[in-house]
Each structure stands twice: as structure tokens, then as C-alpha cells.
Image 1 (cartoon, one colour):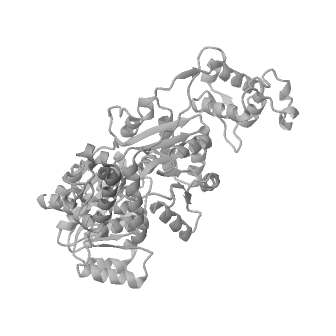
Image 2 (cartoon, one colour; image 1 turned 90 degrees about the horizontal axis):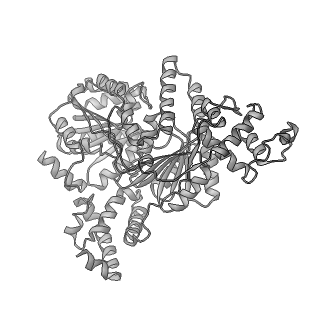
Image 3 (cartoon, one colour; image 1 turned 180 degrees about the vertical axis):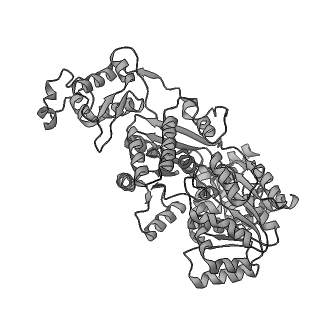
Length: 598
């Protein structure tokens, strides 16, 4: 491990390993097949990159997405580590040359897509390489009970058994239930006592669920508060992604979109804009993100509830990979459940799989309604029973005052009953607001005693209030394109005066960026200029966490610059000068900061 620590500092700029990394690396260096289950941002790639530098042969990394390979290889090359990838973006001539280079020992790491393992010609070439380690990234894809099952992953073990070099196997994932973990170990020949689990908690992530709010209005307020921060907004459908993109684009936000309905060229251009920080916010379906290594994502917002906790936690976990405080916000509405049920039905699963998916969806609904710690709920789902409250999620911190809205709720419920519980949210809202809409008068709803009793509010705000009541399960939604609303037993108790309805004040979005962090913003500009010149994403130059550390340490010399977290000798030689010059210029303009730092 002495050599491992040396390389950690030399190439990656860190003095110590994160939780679980050293244990996994120790297993691998001792020749033990190992599985590592660590949260997104926990540093899984270090677990095979350090052994790759120590082992005599090449490390083969099976990686599911082109974007992941490119980001990983670009980062390794910037750190002075020889690496390459093989995927569909290369011509056959380029791929053949890379295999020749691999055979000649040019690379320490070679990334390949799992589908390439289905090519017998390629497998024969692999057998000629001196492969010391096979690292299986996103290993949950190997399990049919996982949320991203890839049949081609099942070929990995057959490949390993055929390799004459008898490499060590390392499987890594961030999201694995007990069933998925068992599948990974069984398929890859890993003993279950060689599974290293660090826990799923991400202490720098702040979780919240927003219910009963106007999603669009909340989102605009949030993005206004966080104009300079990078974030991802997930939708359940392409249609919603397109619609939201248009809305935010018209609002002047630097927004991109990504979904499977776009061609590859369009998706690639949008993704590149996001990685380069030219696009601040990415609107996407779940087609975007797995393997995206962008470290400075400050927020992930789910505009619609995802289908299961595995998807949610993996997508939310793309925030704060650099360790800085980041937000994960889920905007819930009961309509989301209907959309996900429809999508599950459309996928034509077997009855057993459908039952499993619906069970997982109901657990997502439970998450959205829990009044306990949100992170503790997530950890329990992944098998960490008895996890302590995080102390910093919305439910742990929420100190907003409750307002008694029982009378308003009774108005809504009474109106629904008088309308025969045969209509949806829009019509009920219009009757309560006193609308002269033709449908309202045609049904003679303007003659009801409840007509116009909430006319001091707009129909839109009444509809939002109905969403709140539905989220709290006082109202249930029927099926169909235009769901009919009916009272639940809890709603009837409210109407009869047996139960009160309390509603918290509206959530006010908070800004992430410190307004007076002038040096940090200057360093971001330096990073952006370097990235544009070298045609690489800014976060590959240095993470936000490294820039924050520079702002705090104010290094003046090369030796001091090497003490910054995330600065290795390769990057110090390559980028140190412009950053040191920027820091020196800043201190010249603000000498009082230099005195304070000393």
C-alpha cells in the first residue's frame, strides 16, 4: 500500500484515501475478486486506477456509456496516466491501432463497452493482452433486478474465464439492493464476504421533496436564485423535457436538453455544452447521466417522480461529486404516479417483474410522503436499517410555520361532493373561483352554493391547493387521461370536522453561491479559458472543490500549490502558473486578505 499512497499523491493530489478505497485496493492487490458498493461520488474509479498503476499488465475497464469512457480517459491523460477507450465513435482502423498499442504496453487502462464483448474477433484479440485486472463499472447492470439491466454484461465472466492471464475481478456500483448484490457476486464469481460496502450516505447532499407547489413557478424561483450554478433537471417523458426546455429557454436560462428522441449528433452537442459549462442547466430523461463524470453539478431536480429508488438515488447522486454541498430536490405530484404506471405497462414486463416494479413505485410514493428523515429512508431501502437521521434534509430542518387551512379544504371537498365527484381538478377550481366558463354554466354549476366561494384566489392557485390536498391523500385520483377526483376517508373526516388540515408556508429556494467569493469566480474564469484552449471540460482541469481550497489556502509558491486538494505533480506543472498568477493578482488588489491568511 506504500506504493498506492505514493501514486495517490503523485497523480491525483490526495494524501489519504476515502472510506472503503484502501480496503478495496488492498483486496485487489492481494489478488482477491472483490465487489465495491459505494455511493456516487465516493471515488470508485480510484479503486481500479491505483491498482492499474501498480500491476504489471493492463487493466480492462468494462464501462456502459461512451460519455463515461471519454471523461475518464481525458481525466487520466490530464493526470499523466496512459489510457484509451474502444467504442463506436472510433473507426475500425483506429480501434485496431489501439489494440496494437495495448498489446505493446502503451496503456495502463483500456475502457471497452460491454457490447464489444459479443464480438468473437475482439475477444480473440483480448486473449493476447496481458490483462492484470478486469474492472466492471456500473456492475448493477449485470442483474435483471437492477434498474439498468444490460444483457451484454452477462458475457463478462465468460470472457474472464477465457483470459490466459487469469486477471483479478473488481465489480463496482453505487446502487445495489441485497438481490442485486447477490446477482453481481454469483455472476462474477465473487465471494459475498469479499464485498466492501461503505454505506450509501452522502453527507454533502441535501434532500427535499416539494409537494403541493406549482412546479414551474418553484423551478423558475430556484433557477433565479442559482443562476451561476450547474444542475440537471430530470423528467419522466421526452414530451415533458421538450416542454420544459422551451419554457426555460424563453426565460433566458442557458439550458440544454437530452433524451432518446434526439439524434446522436444533437445529444452529443448538448452534452458537450453541459460538460464545458456553456449550458448551465440540462433538462433530461433518464437517458442522460449514467457515467457523466461532471463534478461541479450543484443541484439535481426531479421534475417528475422517478419509477424507483435505485433510479432516483443514482440520478440524484450526480450532484456534488466534488464533495461540496449540493441539493437534490424532488417535485412531487400524484399525476407522476400515473405516468410511471403507464410507462411500466408500456414496457410489457413479465407479471413477476411488473409486480416488482409496482412495489418499487409504491415505495417511491412512500418516500415522497414520509415525515421522517429522507436520507434515513433511502439508506433503509438499500439495507442500512437503523440509520441515524442526517440532520440536514428538508424534513430534519423544516422549521416553516404551519397554517390551518381546514376551512379552505372543506370548501374544496364540499364543492367536489356537490359536483358529484365526477370531475377533475381544473373544473373544480373554476367552480370555486367563480368562473363563467361555458362548461361551468352548461352544467349549471354556477347555481351551486359552493360556486365562487374561493373567488379571492385565482383558479390556478386553487388548482395548486388541490394538488396539495391530493399529495396529502385527502383526495384520490381516478385513472384515464382526465382523472376524476374523489374524497378519501381522510378527506371525509375533514369535511365532517373530525380532522384538521395544516399546510406549511411555501418553500423559498436558497442560493448556493456565496456572493462575495470573488477569488473563486476569478479562478473559475481561469479554468474556463484553459478548458477552451485544450478542448476539455473545465472540471477535468480542476474541480470546484480544488478551486475552493485554493481560495482558502491562497498558495503563493509551487510547493504551496501542491498542498491544494486535488493537485498532483502533473497538474501542478501543467496548470499551476496561471492559477498562481491569478491568486497573486487578487492578493495585490486586496492586500487585507493576504494579511488575514498569514
